[in-house]
Amino acid sequence: MRSGVTNSLNRPGWHLGVAALWLTLSYSSSIAAQSDAAPHDPLFASDEPLSIILKGPFKDIDKRRDKTAKYAPGSLSYDGPNGAVSITTTYRPRGNFRLDKQTCSRAQLWLDLKKKQTSGTEFANQHKLKLVVQCRNSKSYTEYLRKEYLAYRMLNVLTDISYRVRWVNVIYQDLNGKTLWENPAFFIEHKKRLADRQNLLTVDDSQVSRSRLDPEQATMAALFNYFVGNADFSLTGSNVGSCCHNAKLFQQDEDATYLPVVYDFDSSGLVSAPYASPPDKLKLRSVRERLYRGYCVEEDVFEVVLNNFRDQREALLAVANEPQMLSKRTAKRAVSYLEDFYQVIDNPKKLNREILEACR
Image (cartoon, rainbow, N blue to C red):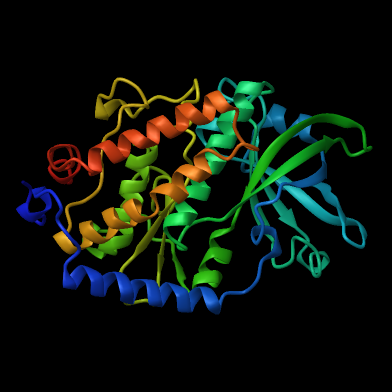
């Protein structure tokens, strides 16, 4: 047993202690209070798919793949309740691995919306938005995209300190209005909107010490990535830019601990995209092989996080099994993969071996 987690977790029927219960109630009350005071963003207030038309030089963007280039001109439009809505929008490619043409035939996109034109629309309060674009034009890649979208939705079930997403059906047009192709995609909430919603500050440090991480939120982030089978992340550093790798940091005030929020789940075992492979240094056979990469924390913290996953089991599996999102076969396989996670955390020996002793 690693230090920081005591042997009481190995006993069948172990229960939530008084300290853990207090931590859960105080943490939940704090988050509820923050959510009640949060500004309202219509785009992420609904799970209903939204049909939009994006107009821009997408063939040129896909060809160049230059994420340092100036934003290219265009527009975003959709049919609102009071008629057609059009918002001046500019585009720039983004991403790292999915930016490579060998990986994806379509570039992932940043959208920069003219904020003055968003008032009173579905995009009110939005300025810069990430659009997760379908990587290739096939039904299988639509399902990979859907599973990644559902991963974000499942994290929303577990914690409000997570990125919200919105599914969109997109018609891509050139600047003359000629339709180029049609594919689904999803928007990801901007980190500044998440911060506003939860009354948090964003953190832009390039490297952080693990001792500065909030134990519960860091454990939640790591355990969720274990849940979906994602080993491609870091909560303390990144090879490029600000911390972290496939995670962003927030805090309640400048003296508070850091709250990590994970994202980018296309390399997870749940999604099982054909281009995905686990980091070489981890020596995993495939992305479907799970590895817990969280840090060792006190028993009370582990109890709170594990019990959150247990309490939300039905809700999480219901998201993975949404009939309008996945085929029956794909949903069945996804649910089976997630059920394997519960086979671990509900078995004291497996929990100890696969998670508690694997913590760093």
